[in-house]
Amino acid sequence: MLVVSLSLSQTSSTNDGLRPVNLHTDLAPLADLIELAFADSMDSSGRAAVREMRTLSRLRPEFQTLLGVNELVQGISLGYVWMKNGKLVGNVSIYPADIPARLGKTWIIANVAVHPDYRGQGIATQIMRASLHEIHRQNARAILQVDANNDVAQRLYER
Image 1 (cartoon, rainbow, N blue to C red):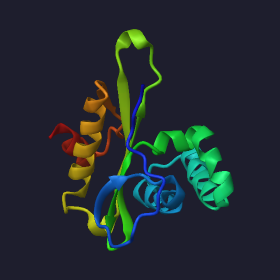
Image 2 (image 1 turned 135 degrees about the vertical axis):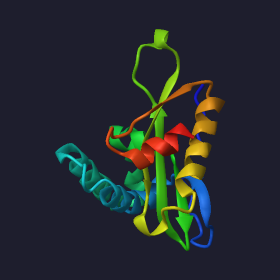
Image 3 (image 1 turned 90 degrees about the horizontal axis):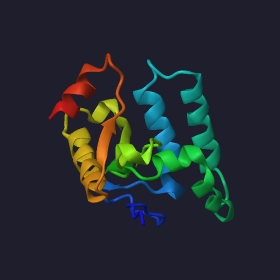
Image 4 (image 1 turned 30 degrees about the vertical axis):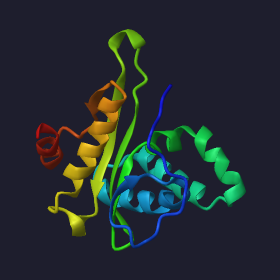
């Protein structure tokens, strides 16, 4: 049985630091962060995903149960965010990889992003540690999704 860290409750804006993604409150700010962080490399499917996140964020609460069946949302719902002064400033998405079982249990780490105003403070490192801890808790290995030209991200992953 798969157990993941996923919060569906409201989080106080005074709580800074690491917490699991909250689908009911985080979709719109996640869309903003992902769009900002990956603006230079985002293709049309990435832009469509950001638009879909914003659309889903506007659903009335009674329709938010649909979030769990949306493939896009399933890909971001298992990660972590970093809050600073009530603002979502960092994200790492983790999700099980769709690979043959004979290759072993594997999870993907993606969308590692920190708002430019908050970079260099160790936020990405701390979110990555939490993500790797969760993946290891699942007795799985990690595959890191990173742009080959992103030297900063590659150095983070090599630590």
